[in-house]
Image (cartoon, rainbow, N blue to C red; front, top):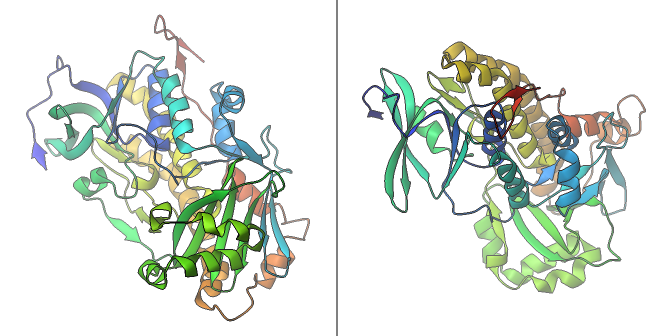
Amino acid sequence: MIEVARMSRSSTDEVRCCIAGCGPAGAVLGLLLARAGVRVVVLEKHADFLRDFRGDTIHPSTLEILNDIGLADRFLRELPHSEVSEFTMRLPNGTPVKVNFRSLHTRYPFVAFVPQWDFLEFIITEAKRYPTFELKLQAEVDDLLFEDGRVAGVRYRAPEGSGEIRALLTVGADGRSSRVREAARLPLVETSPPMDVLWFRVSRRSTDVESAELRIAPGHFFALINRRDYWQIAHAIPKGAYEGVRAEGLDAFRRSFATGVPDLADRATEIQDWDQIKLLTVRADRLRRWYRPGLLCIGDAAHAMSPVAGVGINVAIQDAVEAANLLWAPLRRGDVEVRHLARVQRRRELAVRITQAFQGIMQQWIVAPNLADATTEPSVPLIMRVGTRLPVIKNLPGMIVGMGLWRTRVRTPAISTHNGTARR
């Protein structure tokens, strides 16, 4: 904790809002605030966005948000992507359990699979059109600055040396290992997901199925994501089992993949080295309080989500939209108060907690039992198999996954990039 002198209004390092982390939440919040005429700087500790196996399922809820600001059609036109209108969970006996998005009341009844680096570049390119936006790459937050008990900005490290940015509001959007959250000492509630995930890829052929699929095999759980010219595979394993998996050797890993996904078994030999396999240690947690004077956490910094259903990136973006909706005007006026920050949490917390509960049910009902027993034929609980066939509730999973608990709309104004005048 670093105490600083009262901020000088003439400081070139003073902004209205400093966002730590340029993931989906930080990038979208930066765009929306700059679009509303708020001077904002976003700090990203990496030199670029090229990190593989990050959340990149753009759900209908996010496409609707992009449509609110006139970007959805260009996003779909310019960025290479695949569109999936249905997820299928397939048991070894061929029994399918489907999550369908086609019945959603939206212009975009599908999930768009786009590499996250392409999504972030798209958002940042748009944000840079606004004179009040700045992105600092290779700028890693070291600590928070405090003034009279209020967070007054950040100290960061960059290749050229250390620096400080003083801000009316600091936003922690720096992920599940958030340095901002740690420095703010906000109270955290942690849960214990029953799995970790191994990510890897194998080639895809034109004769392969088009849709994204989930495959359950004895002791294993696989998700197949269509990347057009390759399959991205998520292999769920029991929590903490990674070292044991490695100890069994690469041949055993290839055999388990071939058993769990038999139609891709001939591509198991493409896995030649453990460096091709990335471990995601699954965490699920949430802050009891997302804020303190001068500080707000959003996205994974406020609530790390399980990878179940790929909702994390979309929940984080909804946080960013609500934060922008509620804070752009106080930021413009220069009077952000704790009550404004508390309102962001109130608007978002129920949806987050219900979504995490939904993920927990999926993990406990499907993932955990099938990972724990490698000798018994996998199954899906009867209530889920029956429910997916009942007209009244069969569309409910698609609604929860695709749109969230309720629609999040962009309500920030947009300014001209030329003369700074506001328009709605």
